[in-house]
Length: 182
Length: 340
Image (cartoon, rainbow over all chains, first blue to last red; front, top):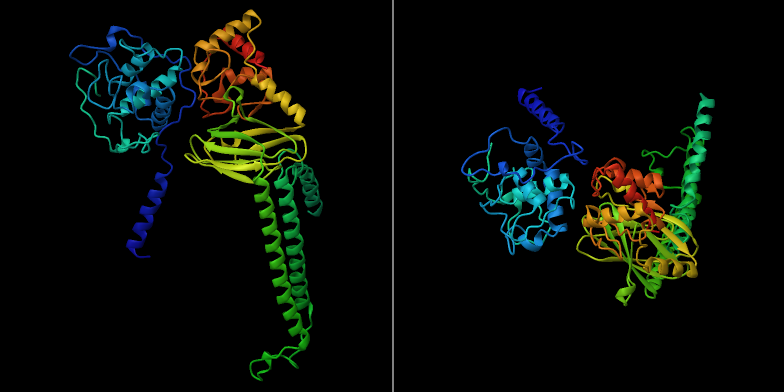
C-alpha cells in the first residue's frame, strides 16, 4: 500500500472517530430540580465595572447550548415576546439585537429581567414559565445580538424574515458596564 | 435442533394476534381501507399465481434429465436456435399471461382510485387536525363559531358519514395514518392537505404519526372512536359545554394554580381565565382515554405522574417539568380529574 493511500486511510478513520464527540448535553428536565433565577437584587447590576465574585455556572451551560437556545427561540414567539420586541428589532419594547442592555446583557441578568419584569411595560414571567424556560429564553435573547457561537444558534428563523439568519448576525460589542465578558 | 426451531415458531405464533385489532391496515373498517384490501387481494392472487407458475417451471427445468449429449443443443451444430413446438407455444402463452395479468392489475387499481376520488366529492362535515411535536390538535369546525369544538389527541367520527379532514402542521412534517380506515396523508408546515374518512364499522382505532418527526415520534398517537350518530351527537354536545367549575376546596386550589401559574401559559380551559393556545386544550381532559397523545392511559396514577414530571414520562416533550410542591400537585390533579 502506498504511503499516500495509507495516510489518507488513517485520516479518514480519524474523521470518522470525530462523530463520537458529543457537542453538548440536552437537558430536558432542568437541573438542579429547584433551579432558581436570580432575584432583582442590586448586585446583578454594577455601575461601571465587572461584578465581583464567581459567575453563575449556568451562564456557560445555557449560553453555548443549541438545545437551550432553540427552545428559547420557540418560546419567544409562543409567549408573544414578538408583540412588543418584534423579532429582535424592537417596537413598543426596546430592540434586543443591538449593543444596548438597559438591565445587563449576561444571561443571568436577562433571566432576572424576564422573571421580575421591568418598568414601563415588561411583565414579570415568574410563575408563568418554569425557571428553566426563563433561562432558555434568556439564552435566545442574548443570541439575538450575535453573542452566542455560530454552531449553537439556529440557522433557521421561525418567522418569515427579511434579515440574514442568526448564524450571519454580526456580533454587537458589549460594554464592560453592561456585562462581564469572560 | 429441530425441536428448538419448532419451539421458536410456536412462541412466535401468538404475535400473529397483533395482526387483528385497533391498528391494522387489514382491518377494512373504512371505505378506503376496504377498497384497499380488495385491491390488495387482487394483487396477491395475480402475483401469487404468477409466482407459483415461475417456481413450477423452474422446478421442471431443474428436475428434467439431460439426454446425455445425444440431442444436446450446442453452438457447434447450430441447433440451439431451434426449440420444440411445445416450448415455443408455452413461451407465447407465458407472454400473453403476463400481458393479461398486468392489464388486470392496472384496471383494478384505476377503478379503486376513481371510486376513492368520487367518494371525496360528497363529504358532509369537516374536522381540522393540526399536528404538533408530539400531539394532535383536533378542531371540529362549523360555520357558527360559537359551536366549534376543540379537543386533542382524540377523534370521534359518526359511522357511515364521510368526514373531510383538513390537515396542517405547526412545526415539522408529520403523517396522519388511521390504518383501519384509510391510507396515509402527510401534514406539511405552511400548507394544507386533506384526507377523507368514511368509517363503515363502529369501534375504537389507533392512529399513529407515520413520518419521523423528532424524539417522541413513537409517542404521537391519536385515538379514533367511530360511534353511532346519536352517540356522536351526544359526545359533541358534551364537548361544547364549558369546563366544570371546581366543586371541593382541593379542586378550587387546583383551579387557582392552573389558571394563574405555568399551566395557563400554554393550555386553554374554556370558561376559565386559562387561555393559552400552545398546548392541548384541557377543557374536557378527564373524558379522554389517554394522556400525552396516547403515551399513557388516562387514570389518576398516570395523571399524577404526568403532571409531576412529564420529562420522565415523555422525555423531550414540550411540557416542562415544573417541580410542583406536593400540596399543589394534589390540588392540580384533583382539578384536572374534575374536567370531565
